[in-house]
Image (cartoon, rainbow, N blue to C red):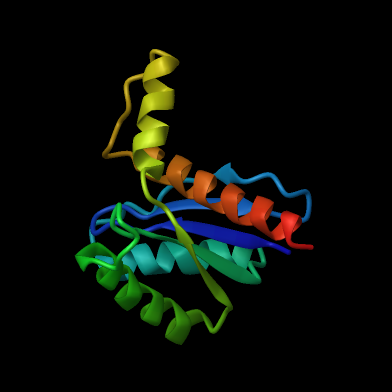
Length: 138
């Protein structure tokens, strides 16, 4: 099932895609200046790749509780539900961006926050976790 992974941020929205092969790949992040343009970028990806469901990183606190950031993501998810009418799955994303940054440092690659590369790689990690969990449960 074509699935879009999303790592939400106020300025950058990381995107990743997985098809029936089951390997999550980062896409170009939605980094447009306005929220409206970022949503249009997401819509374009959904159409072009025939996305059937969304997986959104859910930033729980380290103790597993729902905090301020998770509530912001809840608002974003409400917008996605209204606009795209696709099934949406929340996935615990604690430390996903940190994990990506550490991996890039290990490759001696300087992370570029503005490009959204870290965000899209984090979206790919979140999406791959979801796909693997689905495979274990099937």
